[in-house]
Length: 601
Image 1 (cartoon, rainbow, N blue to C red):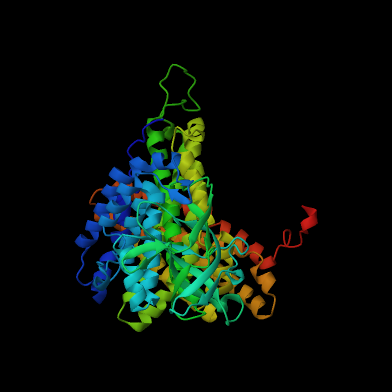
Image 2 (tube, rainbow, N blue to C red):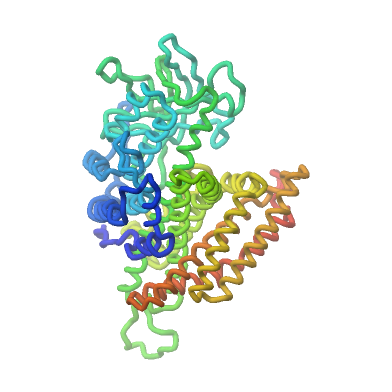
């Protein structure tokens, strides 16, 4: 096995560009919640995450990929390295970085935390997943738990003494949470007794902390069927009796053998086989799914970050390989004695690398924008600003989850292609990152589910209020781009395509209102793709404007800015023209697969 070469994971220069020149993150320091911070304090977390990701996490990636957790005597045993890695990651302060001081946090913006997390994900996404899930579980308890539940479960999670999970999916239900069968019955002591099974529970058992807390959806007796009968419970693997942890009747029934994400187990869990599984309700009865959506939305952003990070580390690997791998000569060179060229000199290799760059840096810009809106929605002192930012963040969430996953897989495949035959071998890392990337389009709601959410709810909710705000944001970006001297053709194309998409939404929404819901949603996956292309074009227009502004300052860094403009040119020349074709599928309701009968396959 080759030792992994040093890898930047993410470009520091690009991260600083996205934060300082594109969204201008220092503006968040004007909000009361972040008034004690500065760009310098933001940098402390970013620098710590960069160093830890590159020097500690990344060197462990191959080992944890090759030596996944084992299941023996009813327990999951993870790689011994996790006993060192997890406490050190907790020491970085990532678990509570965005949380208020009263729960031990630094109250940093989500925008900064998201980018810091991306470095850790790129270094070793499986290791980070334990921390990300734990943070989400603890935040859920912080938001909806009683003081007693917070003391019992939230505090040890935030201290890093225990880990957490989200336990939604069941074998017979999959993504259809209305079909959850796990049941909870009240007990005389005020707790609940749970019985049922959950599947695909990432991090559902491990042996580097003493306990795991499962935030679990279960059906409570006496409530309605469907999602309205589902409540949320904190269910520890081991419960406290006095000061002693005892077994809580949560059993590992099986381990899922995954093609990627090898460092964190995915499990089948059985609750209450002996009738003694205690759970503590979190939030109001019957409101479990509504509460869980907080964690699910956070997890969707996390999946999007994973998509960008996994594509980014492979992109940087591909660029480094292309610079040093000699092969071939120019097509017009007839002299076979001439030295071979590094493959980056071949136009087709640069084509593949530029496509990766456009996906990776466009995806990161989209996630930074979504996180920035989430910060405004949570912390602006102005109610109208909070409302508008919340609508825009909600609109962007399915796109920010899906684009990095779907196009990230394409980017990872290109990294394999750049490596040629070596890329297809396990001696090089791109094949492993390709395996990892595929899960992101399945995690936290498949691409199909995200498409239904975007078209069926987000763009038409409130009479299209969120879409109007998106159009306003794009309009502001176009104005900035024109003023900076960005190609007028790009600005014109952005405005024209935005108008076409808004008209398409109005047509599809009218069909839904007329009762033609199936026809409206028939091409929701295509709509998600076209809207993703449009949203990333918006981010590339912003980046092009910032690049033009940077070049006008004549302070060096011309190569960086010219690279940005070339990637923006690529997106507007190659990607944005695809929107009308995808839109025509939605508009006409092309029915090839809709009319396809099962027996025809």
